[in-house]
Length: 350
Image (tube, rainbow, N blue to C red; front, side):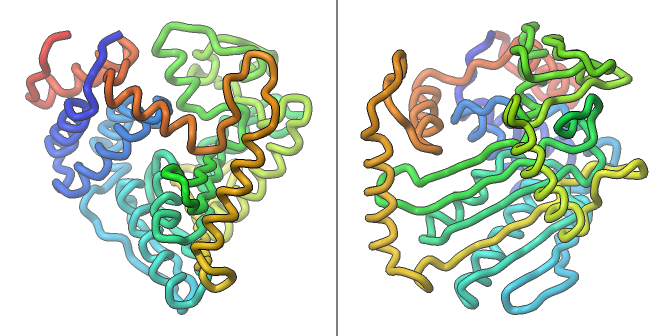
C-alpha cells in the first residue's frame, strides 16, 4: 500500500475538486476534512471518498458553490436548506450558526436538509468544544441509504445514523465521541473491500439474511445489510438509530426511511449548549478532567495498555500518521490516481 503525506493528499484532493469546478474555499475545506479523517485513523471517511464525491458532483447530485439558505429561524433555532451543496460545507455553516445562536440564547438547535455526505461528525462537534461549548450532532441518510437491518430483521431499512458528542476539558484532547449506530460504519466495509479482505463475523448479512464475511455482499444487487450496534443487544443500537432517523429525517425534513425514499441526504440535527449558563467553564473543564482521570485509573484488562477516553486514540494516531504518512489501500489509491489523470492532474508514481 502506498504511503502518502498528509500535505500531498490534501493538495491532490484540492486539485481534484477544483478540476470539478468546486470553488477553492470549498475544495480546501472538503479535502482538509477527508485528510483529517485519514490522520486520526478513520480511513472510512477519508480519501477513499474522493471518487465517490467526484461521481456525485459529475452526476449533479451535488452542487458546489450554491449557498445554504435559512428557511425557518427563531432566536434559538434554524432550519437550513443546503440546496444540495457539499455536505462538509453545509454542515460547517450549520454548526457555526448553532454556535452563534447558543452564545445568544444559551442553547440552540439547528437542522439541515438537502446536503450531501458530511463526513466525520466529530470534526463539527469539536468546533463547539474548542469554544467552551458542548455539542451534539447526528445525521441520517435521508431515508435513501437502507443498508442497516433493524434488530431482528434480515434486510436493510436504516442508514448507519451516526451520533457525535463533544465536551471541552483542560487536557489537550477534548472528549470527542463519534459512533455509528450500526455495528460498523459503511465506510469501514468499503475499506475492507478495497483491501481485498474479509469482514469480521458479526458485521454483515447477505441478501438472504445469512451472516457473511464478504464485504461485496453490501454492494451487489440485491444488497446485503449491516447489523445494528450491540450484537446480541442490538436492540440498543436499533433504538438509537431510530432516534436519529426521527430527528435527522423527520424533524430536520431530510426524509426518513420508507419505500419511496430516493435521494441520499445527510439530514442533520445539531444541539449546542453554552456551558457558562450552567457552570463556570473553568470549573467544568476541571471536573471533566477529574472524571476522565478517575475512569482511566481503573485496572486494565489483560492485554490492554491503557484506558483511553473518546478522542484520545484518534489524537495518538494523528501524531503517528503526521510523522509517518498515511497508508492507503492499493485499490483506493488507484481509483484516486485514475480520477486525477482523467482530470489532467499529474500524480507522482508510487
